[in-house]
Length: 243
Length: 158
Image (cartoon, rainbow over all chains, first blue to last red; front, side, top):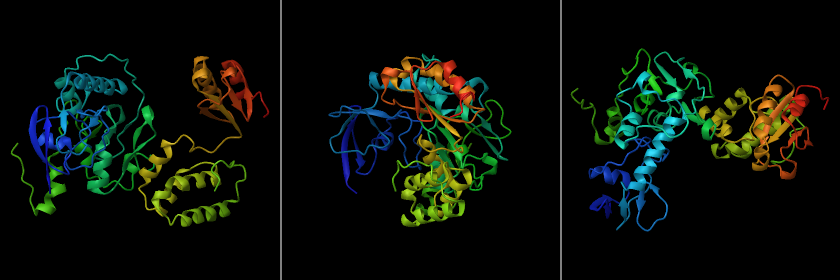
């Protein structure tokens, strides 16, 4: 595999030719914000938070889906990008209902953490508060569409890791909604294996385990890298991180 | 298959099933032809019911949620049986600026219990007549919310 040398935020780094800007940057300790990317899942470029500037290109490119190239010059943290990211977070907050104080993942939410990191302290738009359903028909889990940011992590983990493809996105634009099978309640879905991967990868409180109240839900995503790479690496027992 | 053909000549039910099977076979039951097959199904049945979508998903070896996801992405697919009459409210820029929003709200209220299938359009090309609604093919020019509601409310024998 050939190696590419590129410059990211003024630092010269090397990466494999098939790596994305995102993974090359993270390998070198340059953290590009993201909500839809998750190591082990195919990328969707849905959240647009990892947009970066590439010298010689007018358009911003999503780092999670753009491959590295020789002598590429990338900037990941300019004031313009920071402003874009803040705006995206504000729009996400305004689009549905994200009241942290009454959310199951309060304190461990990726959206909340990112908003704090980027310094989002208020929302300039009028919140939409659409009346969306909460589906708790499943015997172990629930989905609150009001907390969903449509990152499609659940759709991708269900399709490419679990192989069930219970979830998908219906509708378009502001009417988009995560659906199970033909739109029936989750509990009645014939394809769902109740594995719970979607719940663990969900960045917000949209997917949660039943029985968790405000700020009690904690998600563990470490299983994903293990599941995806264990067979290849012939690791038969997961190494558990000490808690 | 002409995608613009009207849905008026709906064949008998067993015949429809055969025609749909044939359409899927023509595409070698390939999931890549999903949109074409959805079009065929809607032409045959007038709308896409859940059992119909489920059958297509099985035959094309596609996840049901994927089939519904694709179908709901496009505005031209219907999921409710079409009612006796059809009304289109234009939401083009000119119509919108002349109050098509209020028009639609009024129409939605009166159409929900009547015999009208209400859809919206993106500019019918008669901006001089804005706001315009088309009821069973008859354009209603510079229509007021109350007048449209009266038409959809049943005081109209089509």
